[in-house]
Image 1 (cartoon, rainbow, N blue to C red):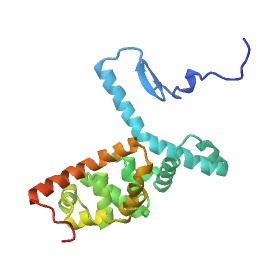
Image 2: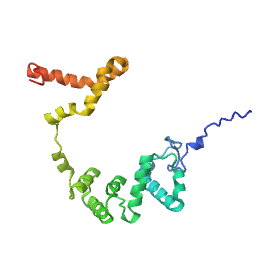
Image 3: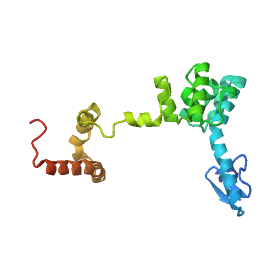
Image 4: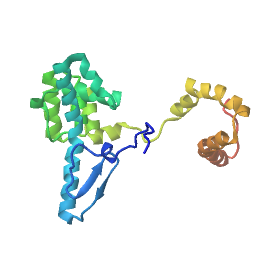
Length: 224
């Protein structure tokens, strides 16, 4: 058969470098069972996948930190296929927090939150996070305020509804004004599909406007 020069994608290109689930085919786009596991076996597979999911940030970060130290600038040639923002975060956190300071009970995000701090501060906040079982949201607030801040305290400080001043300012923001100038006033040049999309966005404010007008009895205008 004549060689056309076009190679057919091989299934092996999709396969993972290891098979984490016995009796199943694992590729980069999914998992397919070839043998029926028991419930306990299936549950154990989930536990292993969860550990792999938790470990991947650290593994990739440590992998590149080691490679850069070993090979220098040429190590960056191995980053094809990685998302730039993701790899930067993984490498930064891994380079800032040594294995001896990491906590297996805490997530990578917990560690990321303290990665910009000095070593003794990292140790302090990781210990406090373990002791008080802080969520990432609580840890971020605690670091900001320099003391333990709980979810209950955060909820108490968060207003349930924006004030009228906040609502007024939102519609007077430069972003809203720019949208009106660039989009609304030139709506004659756009197609019907975009206009229908606008209807979806504006329908809820329109309903609220009509209801408030009915409740107030009449509309006197914002300047009166």
